[in-house]
Image (tube, rainbow, N blue to C red; front, top):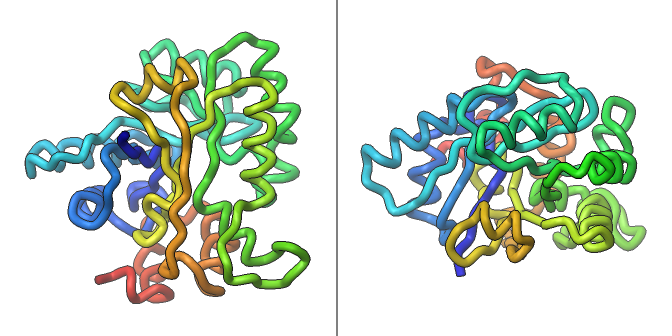
Length: 256
């Protein structure tokens, strides 16, 4: 079986690393077989990553993707060919992804930091089902950091466990038999592969047929208060590229 991380940010949007650095790290330091660079509303980072992978003749597969801001959620477009206009409805965004030959994934539908500006996850999923548009639901590696804030009624628990947001996503996906995929939503190198999709051969076909599964990988490198702070504060606020060096000053180990 193979592993794919379907949700990674580079410094083309609000990640701390360049597409090339991400691909180098994954090629030499992980067991991930396929990745999608999914910068916000922009496929340029993914195109850079794919070009670099081909130039270096790496074995890692690189897909073209983007995390698109709809007017009610974030939606990942896998295998899209051009940028998709933001602030459309989730249904219209998903249709455009499908028209480009790609596949839509609702990213972190129960993210607690998106209440107020995004639809309730249950309403969102059920409205998509009513539209008869195929899609998948993401379990999100970065959201597992939320368990550091509250888990079993203990404050700042250091043991990584399944977050409430991910549990809700899994429950509703199973209820309606929607494919579940895993993505790290990594903005820092150490978060890469913290959630992943397990597949056999043809990733997109297997997502469509609901034959994929998901997994989590939390080692001691992915635990600790400062990483919760990063994901609680920085992940939820898009940061211009000029601030990436400031992020790396906060996390100096990420420079290595």
